[in-house]
Length: 229
Ligand code: DC
Image (cartoon, rainbow, N blue to C red; front, side):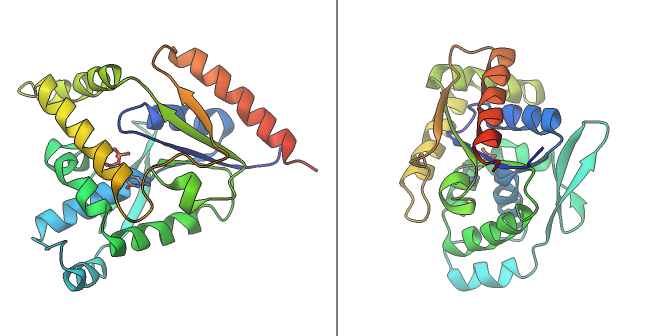
């Protein structure tokens, strides 16, 4: 069957990665979490005290950043390697979430990440999630999805995820972080989060995971049919 590119963009904690992983598994495609790349760069900048408001400092620092994804059979997922070190857990911490939108708004950082993301799509058969995948990274993707969900539901989902690791986290803290990230992501100068004109909106506030997958698999079949000559 013809392989396509599927892009999933949307607000923070809408369940983009959950859906992307399910699709990749079902279709035997590669799943790329583009947000993990911005998170890994943020981790590097924090660890190395890089001043990301200085274009020069960012350019120099990025020459020392090497990003890779590695498959972990135990978690059945791709994990992020930063200069050869597995940083999958570290990049999910709140300290990273607090800064990642600022770092992801830096022009040089975006150019660095987007260039690598474009290469990953060369062989098709890929599901990539993020904020600018359908608009900037793969503007010609065969299927583009724009995900959204009620803020209350998103906060609850994210809180549950973070609470497992950190019992001191509060709902208010999670809500503020999500709202701030959404604001910065949607209002930054370079490739802000927005729906591509040809993206299908998926509001999953009231959708169960199985129902959602069934619906999207139908969109995938339609997209494959439409692009098979
Ligand atoms: O998907 P995520 O929450 O892991 O993404 C972390 C941050 O990275 C998010 O706040 C915005 C940024 N991001 C981006 O600007 N462009 C992408 N394609 C993916 C993520």
